[in-house]
Amino acid sequence: MRYEELTIEGRNAVLEAFRSGKTIDKLFVLDGCQDGPVRTIVREAKKHDTIVNYVARERLDQISETGKHQGVIAYAAAYEYAEVEDMLKAAEEKGEPPFLILLDGIEDPHNLGAIIRTANLAGAHGVIIPKRRAAGLTATVAKTSAGALNYTPVAKVTNLTAAMEDLKKKGMWFVCADMGGDIMYKVNLKGPIGLVVGNEGEGVGKLVREHCDMTASIPMKGDIDSLNASVAAGVLAYEIVRQRMMP
Image (cartoon, rainbow, N blue to C red; front, side, top):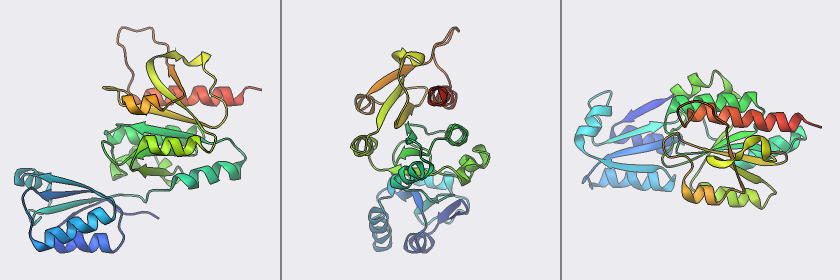
């Protein structure tokens, strides 16, 4: 099911969006505003596990499209999020070991869209992103994915490491993209696997990296020391493809 991307403004409109079941990625609330209607909206947001950001009026005015935000603005997702379990079922139905891509700190929607496109072409069964410090499924992501978002499910989880632990219990292994890791050609990337990629600035967070079973690096011969996150994800994803095709 597809949603149009929406910036929803005004107390009644935002409350109705929550109650109608729209997928709200983020809620922005005027800092210090505690009247009854706003408290009701915040309660609805917490009930739906939506991130609430308390910001200054200048910030709300800046992102407002109507100038009539009444102290609240919500960002609705362009597409529905999937469940991780659905990705595992898809792999099972295809008779393939699960191949998932997990993203830690990818906040650029163009990078997210490009990774979803790569995930589809590489045969990954889904992409997992965290609720915080991550781009949501905006129209920009959909456009950059070149249609892949219609076919590749994306799940949003509260805690990436908890999701990894649950998947480990189901037999999955995790490889972290890290410049300090073993050269990817020397790492066994066959079987049920999750590829964990961070942003090009900070890489994969320490806690998430510690939950990975292996680390893999991309050999580089140039004068700079990092690739764009979507490019790195693509290189490693296709090393997984290459190894899966080997007898």
